[in-house]
Length: 220
Ligand code: SF4
Image (cartoon, rainbow, N blue to C red; front, top):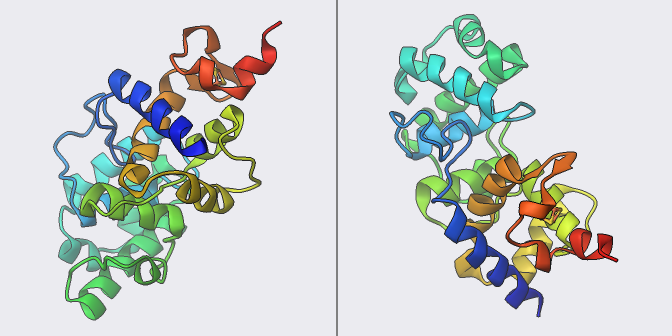
């Protein structure tokens, strides 16, 4: 039942939104010049932590224009990187993590971003969300990538009842067929940006309201 409901919601949303995209390269055509490869997705996703999509886009634009490869970024001066990524917030912390990630991947993995979640989460500033985003968008490995939109909307809709993104990830993995795991981030993030906006959901214009506990509970 839960599985059917999730699939039906994803089917409806997939007709409204295109394929979605990794943070900072959203489906409105922003940053189309950056390739969807593991290096770019990893760095953009680290930049996206604790900031808005627009800030991620600005920061990744500046960074990738100056340092377009893992090799160049591994040798970059962290202070220069921090200046370039300032719009994304936490510049010193993110710059240190990004440069360090590149160095580790070059030294330990021969320059290839690792595929396994356990290896990815051992990199600086890479948690389960970032790992799932890289696996899903850049490696085509089915993964449930839970950001704030996914966590918020799936709880509002009553698909899950969870306290944090990690719980949401495991619960969504349980109730969703593996073949649809990557669609979750693709479509719920777009829905969160356009219709189910934080604090101001546009429920009357929502195509999946008839499958949403919040909407159904508000009806007389
Ligand atoms: S009905 Fe409202 S709360 Fe439910 S998913 Fe749609 S916009 Fe979000």
